[in-house]
Length: 209
Image (cartoon, rainbow, N blue to C red; front, side, top):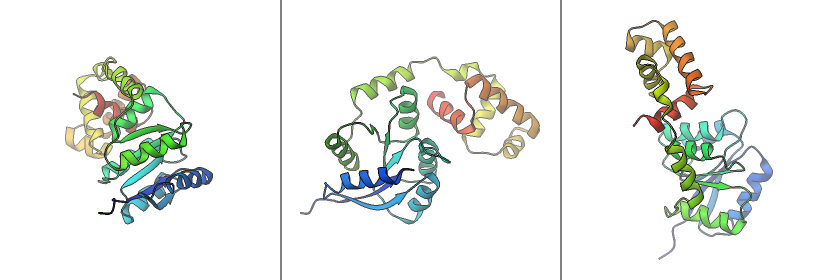
């Protein structure tokens, strides 16, 4: 019986990096690159029209970041395994990406043989987090819950933001003015130490339980 092959999309803003990853993946007969994207927007469009089993996703890209791309892919129902390939070993980055739906987190400076092995294992659903990454996740989880800094109303507004509602929709849902919604959003962004609704949503999803 023939082994299953996996269709792959590579997302990176550096064409040379795309070419290098593609050449590496060609070493495995089980991995077939069927799509390439230079940014998050292109990745989203490609994922809508091309069936892929695995996405190799860069973290730091102009426009939509790797994290925002990942969140959007999962929000649109993308079921592909997603490997984040980056130069960052920040525990916060690792935790945010794993909690947002990444299946693996690999560093660009690791050995090519190891990288290929881990990508293939992820495609096969066999990937497990390394001890270092698991320790980083545990450390992030044990941090003080930042949502405790919020007032009850700020928490409620953040919850509605996390559902993807606009300011106008939140105002209608909570029977408050749109300007009041904006004030609450400014307040919880400041208290959480983040600068965007996406980042606040990630914190909410991570700590709400």
